[in-house]
Length: 104
Image (cartoon, rainbow, N blue to C red; front, side, top):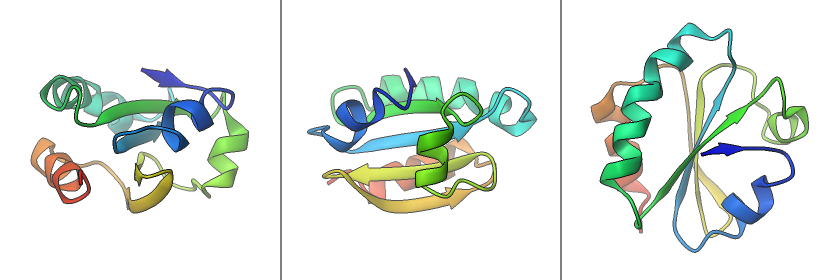
């Protein structure tokens, strides 16, 4: 699901399950390459964790708030707080490890 500045608080900060947010941009080639993996993870963790994307060019307020300077940036939120931050392209296994470490 695609987030916006307007939906970020409700969908991420008020979520009752952990959330992985992929901060991306349309011109970022590694970001586009990760889309299929993120779709797979979303299906694998359905109901246990939410996975969202936020386009930094269209949602500058949230990107600035979380100091997004490199893409892709992944932030895991749990209980409304950022608990893990990783920058750069990741393998599916690395993304799974991020999710597993912060699911509880």
